[in-house]
Amino acid sequence: MSGPSIELTGLSLQYGPERVLSDIDHTFEAGCCHVLMGPNGGGKTSLLRSILGLTPFTGDITIHWPDRPGAIGYVPQSAAFESSLPLTVMDFVLLNLSRRPLFWRRASKERQQVLAQLERVGMAERADRRMGQLSGGEQQRVLFAQALLDQPQLLILDEPTTGMDETGVRYLDDLIADLNQRGCTLMCVHHDVGAVRRLPNPMVHVVNREIVDSGPADQVLAPHKLANLFQHHSRKVA
Ligand SMILES: Nc1ncnc2c1ncn2[C@@H]1O[C@H](COP(=O)(O)OP(=O)(O)OP(=O)(O)O)[C@@H](O)[C@H]1O
Image (cartoon, rainbow, N blue to C red; front, top):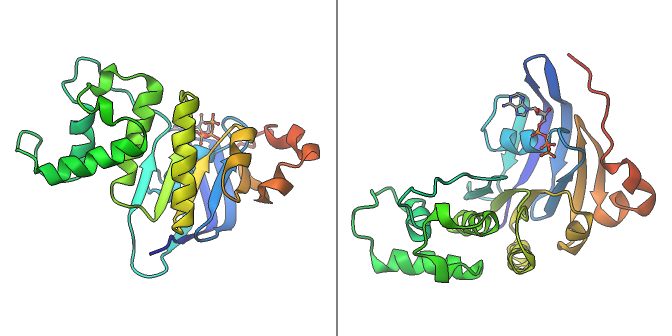
């Protein structure tokens, strides 16, 4: 089963007097690798959170699934784990696999499933470490493994390579290429122009209160446009 398209109609979002997203009409095509870029505070995370239903907005967001609704995976920008929390990598990913409490014995089938996902991000050997004792980049890899468990058809990533070393980035590149080949729709926030160019046929959307530019990466990230990519609009107070 392949991924959905996402249609925004008159999407606006405001925090107090500050208008973060303003009357956006836009469609993200099915099965593509979409990258949101733009200046800090331009509204990229707010746009992702709106699609996930994690923040109130006005207007409409419609997810057009090709068949029946599929699974959605989400990797947030960062997560904090208290180092004294007795929650291992295996526990954390297992928690997301079933609704049963952790102290119930887990079937080895479930454990194998989790290990297979951890293997895909190079973290299987650290399955018994506590989440709070991993580095930021390692935690990010585990969050990614957890988001892959349900075989998502829509995968939403907020700055997925933050804190990751080269090996982590390579795992991520391979996984994204694999998901893209399977027709999954990917939405991803990125700041690194070089990393975006490595993605499979990326569509880049520049978010700066509105979507100010959109198209294939080689057009939107053309050298003469790069200077303006991270430039801020003066923000209007609504
Ligand atoms: N929960 C919130 N309450 C109040 N203001 C918020 C909230 N979340 C975000 N904002 C503000 O909304 C604006 C857009 O934030 P958002 O995180 O969407 O931007 P972004 O483009 O993802 O930025 P960055 O590139 O720095 O991650 C910022 O000015 C931010 O301070």
